[in-house]
Image 1 (cartoon, rainbow, N blue to C red):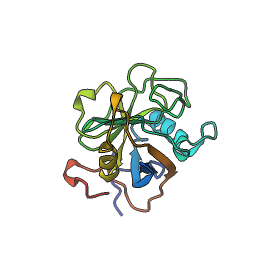
Image 2 (tube, rainbow, N blue to C red):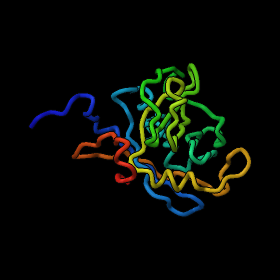
Image 3 (tube, rainbow, N blue to C red):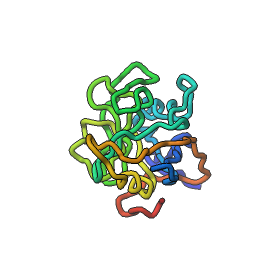
Image 4 (cartoon, rainbow, N blue to C red):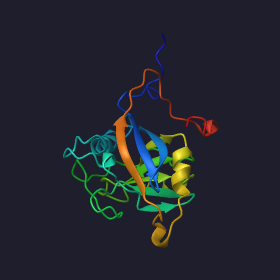
Length: 192
C-alpha cells in the first residue's frame, strides 16, 4: 500500500470532538482537527486543556462558555479562568509559536494576539479572515460547519455577548481508522 505524502499524514491524536449547547439545547458535536504536525506546542496546549492533562481540570468538560460571538467573523471561547474573555493561562510558559497556517474560509481555530500571549483562549473563525494571516496562529480547523453556524446565529447583545448561554459539555479525543484530511474549500459543509 502506497504511503501518502508526509504533509497529508495525520497523527491519530489530532482530532477532538466537543459537544456544544445553545440556550440549553444540544447544538451538536464540533469536530476539531488540530495541526499538531505544524504547530505542535500550540496543539498540545489546547489538547491538555480539553482532556484534563493540565491540572486535571478539563475545561471543555465542565461548561466552558463562549463569551463573544460576532456573526460572519468569529466565536471566542476557552476562557475557563474568568469566563468572560479576559483570562489566560497556558500549560507551557507563554510563548510565540509563529503564524504558519492561513485563515481560510474553513472555520479555523486560532489563538495568540501578540508575542507571548498563547494561552487557553481560542477564536473560531466563521469566514475568510485573511487579514489575520501572520498575526494569529491557526492551530486547527473545524470539520463541517453546522455547529459553527448554529453558534454564530445565537442572538447577541452589547459587546457581542450571546443572549443565550453557549456552553461546551464534553470534549474527547477521536480515534480514526481512516484518514482525516484537511478539507478543501470545495468540500463546503459536506463533512458535517
